Image 1 (cartoon, rainbow, N blue to C red):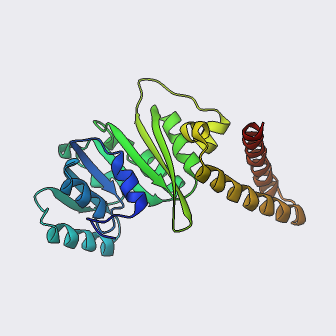
Image 2 (cartoon, one colour):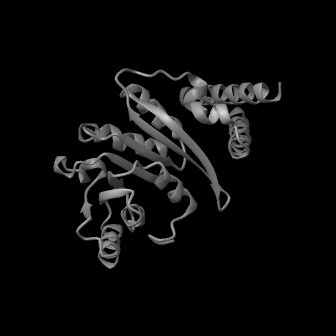
Amino acid sequence: MNAQQLSQRLMKVAEYVQQGAVVADIGSDHAYLPCHLVHIGTASRAVAGEIVKGPYESARKQVHEEGLNDKIVVRLAPGLEAVEPEDGVTAVTIAGMGGTLIASILAEGNHRLDGVERLILQPNIHAQAIRQWAVDNDWHIVAEDILKEKDKIYEIIVLEPSPHRVELDAKQLLFGPFLLKSRGETFKEKWQRESTQWKAIAERMDKAEETPDIRTKKEQLLQKIALMEEVFKDENS
């Protein structure tokens, strides 16, 4: 993978960045995504943020080799602290992390989202945490996508600011409102995999000594399994 030939999941993330955006890519690694977006003319400028020294140096090197020092600034900073008000960022991309971590990055850096028109987020797991953050912070989902690459399944969630709170029910939080409507083959495969894992975990919990913590986790798991069965019952009816 390089700035000219992104992975399938990053290409899909790039598709949701609005034309002419000033992009902040958080956890940018080699800065392949911002370099690509500037090269193809989607992004006018970009910020590549990294919290780890090694990837930060790799990103700086990549931007220099691509001849984009005048278009992309690379910063060593945690999360959205890489974004400064004078950057004029209008789109934020965060890809390749857990959904809980992405949600915490957004929560901790919420004050740096002023002027941001779109968030394009690609969680590896626990996308529900991002949807819950969106509900709690007056952002609404405008698009979702799901794809399979090298036997791994990824979700993409696209958020825009909302003037009011947009509620999601339990199914929508877990499965995604757009993905729940489309229910493509990759969606089905993902949740069939999850269902198998959840049932195996629930069986192990049945055999373990019951503690308040285990009881709570089991109840949450059974709730998810029930939602899953309801969704696929609807699918087969």
